[in-house]
Length: 185
Image: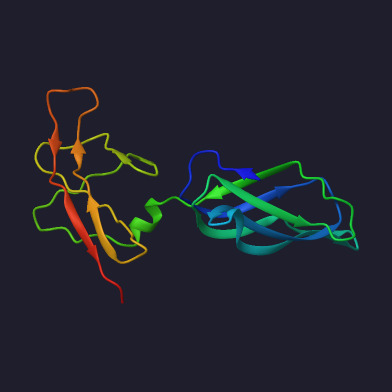
């Protein structure tokens, strides 16, 4: 199993396998553990082939496994099929995570004429909370949009947003909570 270094629910772009082997080809399956009515099972997310070959002094390798999925678990299972070959020596596995703000850049809520957009400095994205940090905020009202995605129809509670300066507790702000109604197609 490949443990995620930070948190679950992050989009994973790819995995890179590190091996000292000079000549090999292996089929790789990646999956996540999932709890079902019968216990814990594996849900397959995809397959890939990794290889390193050499012909006439030229070598070619494909050690990166494209994933491009949001992994909803803190663990990722990699099954490397050796078949009749000796076990592949693995010296490292690294993952490239896709940043969630890149999704938000493709969709933006239109601003009203007098809105002043806030420039995001840092985002701490977690399973139950999202903390947004703004290093510079002009006096008055500022606007920042957050894109939320629901994967099923239903009514969802959108909690109140809180704004608190980091070093000055004299000021704060709270928005109203609301409900989001998602309907099926």
